[in-house]
Image (tube, rainbow, N blue to C red; front, side):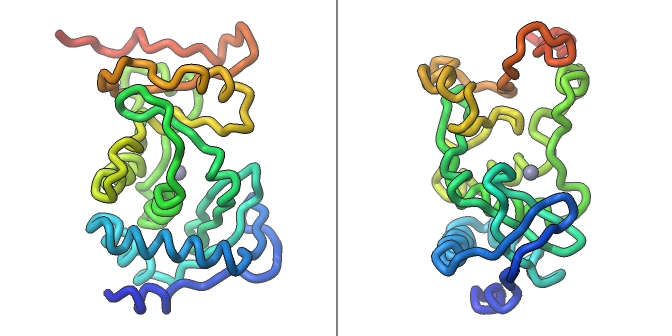
Length: 216
Ligand SMILES: [Zn+2]
């Protein structure tokens, strides 16, 4: 597929309304230009991203919309819609595979939602503590591994995200605590990063990885 073919298969949401449980409205022309620019960079900068974009747009036209600030970014598979709030994405940080708090790149947020549109098997991990504490829990889900390949191919290896639930917004009160120190593992590579909640002794919010197997 060529980039022009891709563009022919992208539409923009007009008006305002709701899709599934999400509020959606239309992107400004500047926002449209930015998102198409990110997709163009991804398309030419990463073979894996090109595969994702080709596959997604060839199955059904993709609709791009504006997400509510609180929702940041989301997808709806039946309507093939992805929505972004670039201002909120600009406030997003996460712990990378070397334990460093890094700022999100909008290109990565864009391709993350496109990966979800590949199919029902592309899901993020549950946020339930009982799941995340379990020995079998998968802290990446099935989208993040693809996202991380794309980050590496784009030359954004510093943005290799450790775990799905390792993200925090600048608006979040936890951000000021986390950002006070930028490196949490002295550069050592980690498999899992989780950011706990505020709220004191909540039994349903314990971070407990003791059930995970230890080798070596
Ligand atoms: Zn996701």
